[in-house]
Image 1 (cartoon, rainbow, N blue to C red):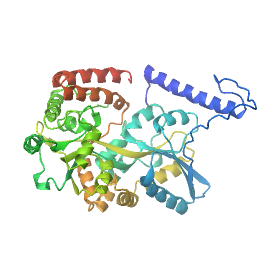
Image 2 (cartoon, rainbow, N blue to C red; image 1 turned 90 degrees about the vertical axis):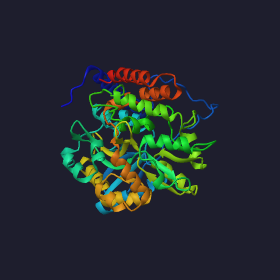
Image 3 (cartoon, rainbow, N blue to C red; image 1 turned 45 degrees about the horizontal axis):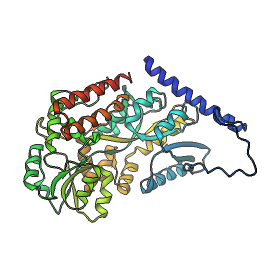
Image 4 (cartoon, helix red, strand yellow; image 1 turned 30 degrees about the horizontal axis):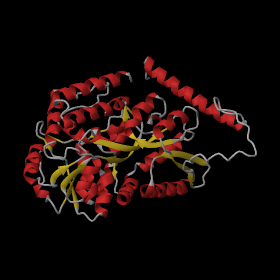
Length: 438
């Protein structure tokens, strides 16, 4: 059983107090009383009507069975449409009702709603929130309902299984994978000419680059997430389960020096929008980006290919991006836990994930589904890249990483600090932030 440190206990008590206040507010409102701290204002005939509060999306009910499974999610647009079709078919075939609610600000909403008994059965979110949600008792382990490590290892890819195990227990069913990879414009560079190592990348860029022309771009300046392939490819563990980092190691210095070398082959003011525009305008042959960008590139008429991130020359290991995993988690106080996990297992099945991949071009987490869709060159490219990546850390200490890593990359990119000083400062800042979570 998990034991809480005093700081974790204080956080838990704070969440419980917030939840109690929310419930009290709802009860008082139902009785016609003002909420605590709200001014008591008598309405008058001359008073202007108050502006309507912004409304959140309404729940969408699929099916009509007596058993109701409530899912809070962040799916939007066309991506969500096929997912809804999958759930609608399941609801009809299994005589259940599935209620879908798209919830803005999901991480904060569940912290209040679940302890108050007002949460969903299933939380559809991302794997890096698993650890913090376990500690806050927002989600529960799946072993009692037949989902354990052996099931995960037999059903999903290794990186997907790693992403949902916390403390040796299974806390989610994976949906799909996201990772950065190299995307190249076939009109500007051939597959045979792509650099295989970072030394080759730097050398080719120096001969290829010209006025307003670049071989390779990405969101390099201060972007922590986009820098991960270089740190991890160099052998750095960015966040350990114990809440430490290897950012300040010798391998960290090698990665920092590599990032510094990229300043010689890219615009100084590079960020996501600049890199994206250069690639779309045909001014950059290669960009490092994720699956969310592909639709725009194809819509613009570009003929693009995908290639795995080159080997980091200092280590001889391939660049290793963070692999984010979309997941379904079982909420604490779920009203229908057995039915919910049955639905989660269906959602994780090979046929469902292959179908979603074919329509949404997402990368299945299910290993058999990957085999079914591997003939799609875009999906195949991201499958190959995810195999070289590392699961996004799902411990609570991931929250201590982003700001220190961003500051480290910014200091290296601008030359404000030497690579050695930048990684030392970043490691110290991480340790300070992680200490607050212990």
